[in-house]
Length: 465
Ligand code: UD1
Ligand code: CA
Image 1 (cartoon, rainbow, N blue to C red):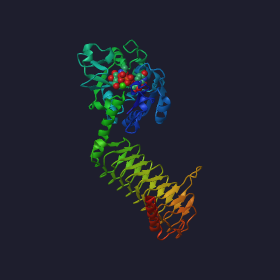
Image 2 (image 1 turned 90 degrees about the horizontal axis):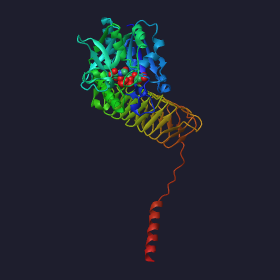
Image 3 (image 1 turned 180 degrees about the vertical axis):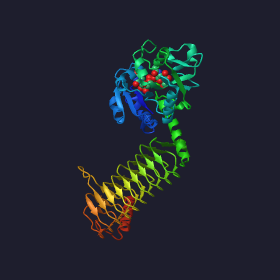
Image 4 (image 1 turned 180 degrees about the horizontal axis):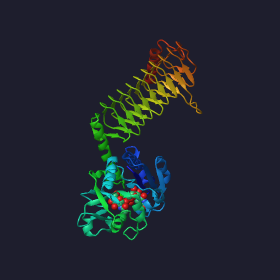
């Protein structure tokens, strides 16, 4: 497909009432403009060019695989395309214009639009939609024979035009030289005083060029986001679309309304997702897992047959058959080995846990490496931070760390070791050793009974006075 994409993403997004530019707002953990860029790439567009303006320092870092132009004054969508003129010049293929605030467009729809455009041999093809409530959208004007002859913005419509329900989606496919040839003919003599890209359609028809329309099958694809309410509505559409696709692939959901999966996540079959689970970024889950309830994973890799209940994970890697939670917190660079168990109220940061090792209760392990088949007792804390730098802890295979151990890093605890409960371990423990750091217990026999007697006698005496 000899096509390029041109994404209009410079607008202010005033109705979002935000300090962030609209296209940088996220839907299911992914910025709006990224949804559109990825759809264009997936559709086979050989280059994706984005025009940005408002809040460009926040939008630009999202577009590392795109070429960029800038629109610094907002004079309308026609002006946006003018700002990309240099990038379009010399290209003889077609240019698909997309809106950075319409993230639900499907790659297949873009590809179908380009195909329809090429088959029709048109100078421009408009993606249109038939809406029960067309308010806010530009209307498609057709002549007696049904050919598209123009687009009129709602604010410029007469009553007859306003009653038309066929709307402009804001997505078009243009023959690039033809688009550029007529771009400078756009004027600003309209209700909003803007250069309307939509006026190109009428100009092409006047010049005797063929303009076609391609009606989108599912008009939710063209939902534009102008407000927080529309963002929530679009999120619902995306959520439903993604969850239905995963259920069709063999994923079980107790209640799909309460599961949010980002567009770039992967899931294996026979995995079950329980309510209030949010997966985002490049999270990948194997098969036969149970996730949730209340589990949130961002950029995590989870193997097969894992159970994660009430677990928060960020950039963590879990091998097969790991169990986590309830209430586990896996922070970046946590690597949990095959069959390991991370229990309740346990936080793991930049730490590797070996196969079949258990950290069952109330622990913090940071900057640590633990070998295989070890048991980390309840309440074990690694003191990895001395107030200046982070220090490493190494614990070997088959180590038994007693409950309430405090491990002051840097320290190395060898294989087949024991540490006594409540010990503060600050010196290396060689292989096979027991380390015990605990002051001797004092037991004073009869002390409590004597004390009680003494108190009773004192009370009797006080009452007698
Ligand atoms: C536009 C169309 C309308 C269509 C609707 C579909 C025009 C004149 N109207 O209206 O026919 O039904 O989309 O959603 O094109 N933008 C810029 N710079 C600007 C203005 C806009 O980059 O100066 C970008 C916006 O960021 C947005 C897109 O262009 O991504 C559409 O702009 P918007 O103002 O939302 O146009 P609509 O009024 O919705
Ligand atoms: Ca819009």
